[in-house]
Length: 86
Image (cartoon, rainbow, N blue to C red; front, side):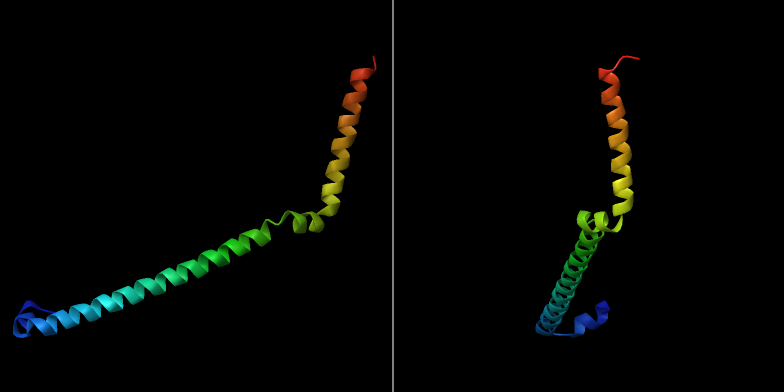
């Protein structure tokens, strides 16, 4: 609103417009907060699903078992090497 228009309006009308603008701003902020809260919840749920250890272990059980077997074999040779002399 230009300064010339605001000079012609009574103060009550200006106060009414300011109150309406404040209300619209508050409603916009509340809507943004709600959207951000929903987005945050969605992201948290998505991250939990992607990083679920049980689901990942089930999906990659063969690789996990092979890795554990290799580790056990190497550890076994290491421990046996400590107690035997060559």
